[in-house]
Image (cartoon, rainbow, N blue to C red; front, side, top):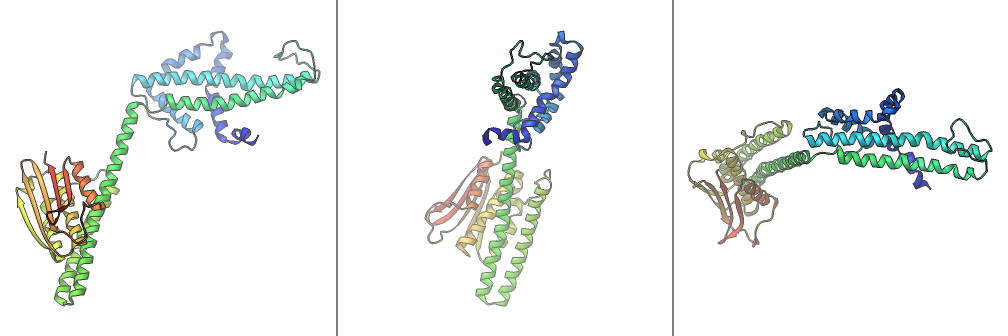
Length: 384
């Protein structure tokens, strides 16, 4: 019984009832003026529904009264953009008026019918509103009195659910609007992933260099070496702060350009940082780095940064061979170092996954893993 009466305790039931009553206020005025032309309000709704802005008002009402408190009710508040949306709005207005007329009729006559049944059971048949017609008084009519109220309950709750379902269908986003929302969501996820990679690469590289430098300085016990290590840590930390400021700038300003991010032409600071950590870095550059398109050059910088970070983190101060080849419309970036002990398969870390994701987003490919006794990161990115 409590479950049956639960809808009567929800505010949504009454806001939906109010939503159905609203159009009947105008219709009732017209019927008071000329009841013989009851079809006129329905005809007027056709040109009204073709106005694009009407869809906005109907969407706002439906969200506030039919689905209050829902985060994603599936009802749009955008104006109609196509004729299909306008026709859906017209159909919605007609359905809303028809359901409103039904609930208005039920809310007026069903309570009256229940009252007449009670009066008839008491031996007094009302003559002012003869819903039952000519009936004889009898106590058994009292047993039927609750039935109209139960029917009223079903009409109010049931039509509220129906009008909500129809609103989601007719006032819901069109195929074009759903596609736009999906594209916006995809762009947002891509931007979040890019920011996560930026933070992982820049901050992870700086922390790795600082840890390696500090450990080497402590083990060496040489004041001169310790001084150089502190300078390297300071330079790396300052560069990391600059990178962090860039990433936070992207978060603060959605339209901030990405051209301020470092490119392969500025890779010297990465190489010097790795050398300062004890790694012996040999570099081979073929082709002009300045000719690399901005997006490719910026992602190439991050790939090189992550590769050197992995070398320092997992292999330590070992010889590293870096090759950057810009030929035949392709950027080939290769980083090799002696294979650390205990590594026998392809890498599965988040940094290596980020390298592969960066390459895939630019239409390229990446290979990370053992190769002829070395650990190899080889990335090929198209320049076009």
